[in-house]
Amino acid sequence: GGGRPRPQSRPRPPTFFGRPSGGSGGVRGTGGCGGGNEPNHQFDGKDYLVSWKLRCTSFTQSAGESFCRANGMRPISLDSAAKEREFLGLVGRENQKYFWTGGKVNGQNISWPSGRSYNNVNWSNTGGANRAQP
Image (tube, one colour):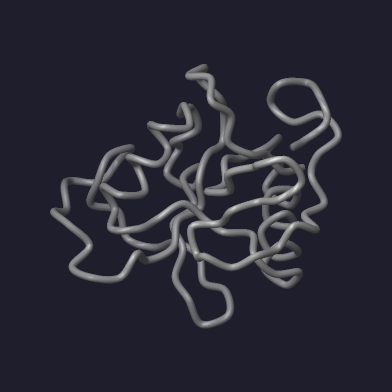
């Protein structure tokens, strides 16, 4: 399954995949569910940080975004069919119910942190709110 950001501030299990944000990456901390974590997944020549591999599985949307920033990353953009297949497949293989992305939905359009346009995501039928996504 997949998920999308919601404006509510409810705790939700598995969160963000991050990808490098560019620039200095900010101050690094000591790891765990804060800053200081190194990427733990590679796809298409890029590094990502998968939060549940660190046992960090309960974030609100804003806390997930903060987690990404604290690790010098930004929330993931599912902005291509290949990336969608990779990360939705990873969620399924690793038995995660859903996760946060960096997408912001406005009507039928999704705005991704990457700036790319991709609206054909195969969203979960249940998601974290037990209703169809997005």
